[in-house]
Image (cartoon, rainbow, N blue to C red; front, side, top):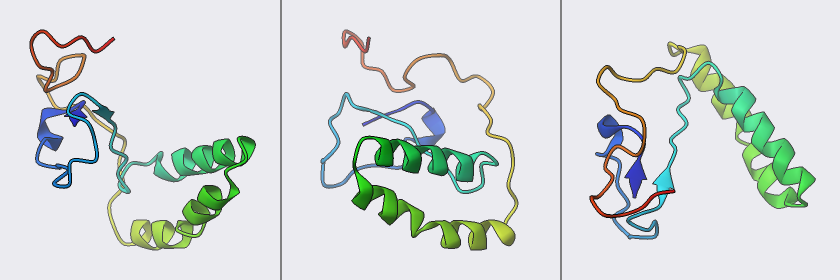
Amino acid sequence: MKHLRDDYNRIQDPNRKIGDDEPVFLLRGQDKAFPAMLLGYIGYQRAVGNEALAKFIEDQMPAVHQWRASHHCKQADIPPGTKPGLANEKPGVKTS
């Protein structure tokens, strides 16, 4: 699993369901854009006919709003020193 940020490398897939070379993008509840991103994804799933997944995510929205009401939310950031590309890219492995 390839994270775009080195500081997220501690988040792993112990069951190895995600390929070593598969990029992973992590959305966090503290991101100010989190609800809008989820709503966009819900809309996309509905547009492609995946109502079950759209409803599943939509049903989580009250918990999202409840958590955000008592936690600090901020704009997403990139840690200093982070370089473009996949953070843990392996030498000799093409990613594009």
